Length: 324
Image (tube, rainbow, N blue to C red; front, side, top):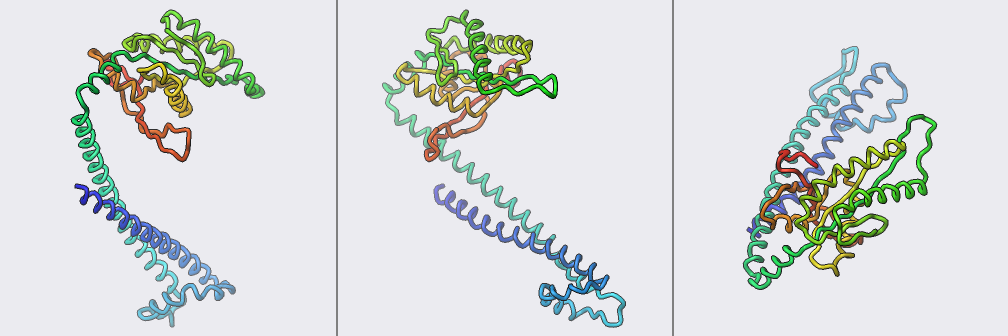
């Protein structure tokens, strides 16, 4: 399978190079056709300075003159014929380009399929190689995990008149503090074991990960009520928030740092969860919600290091995939 995948990779490189050349030829012939028709049109009006560009058409003109002679004809259609031939060739090259592009898509899909098969086998082999004691330890961590929540409010002024000014940076910070204060007041009923701020974003920790279903059920209407309340003050509020699972408290800062990067992706009003959350949640017996893959994102703050991780959006099973 490795040889097959390498062969496909080489084919993709070859077809990509061919496609690049074919696309260049397509644009060249279409442009040359356009140029020929323009110069033919100008030639009909006997524009004086056209002779300066004769060099552009010397070779095609010699070719056309073999089967077409303008002598005795009121108008010379040589340039029009050159334009027509160039247009025809351009269409043939365009069809060829589309076929090569389709072949390239097929090869890329086949390569992706082979990569998925390889990864699936690697995961399977890894699971088989893990000792039972390690598996028990992992299960223990999953069962003892805590629920971690990080949220960032976004505020904007609702402009009711054209002369209304935008909020200053200082105004934005003040309104964010008010929103966070209101959020804390409305959510203290849930009794988090720890609360605080990480880079000015509010985080909450709950002792039991199993509280996730209840928390998710109540958080959306809580946030909706805050949005309505601040609208009365002329402030539009939206939220970015993310949920994760925390197995060890000493990893809190590292996990919050990762979640803070997720917030910077600005997934407005979507309950985004980490892969750690998904694995822990899937380990539960009864599941009220399901996860839809949002995509894989580089969550490293160092641009020279790639740290791609899958992110998911939480959906309610009873709403047939409708996002919360």
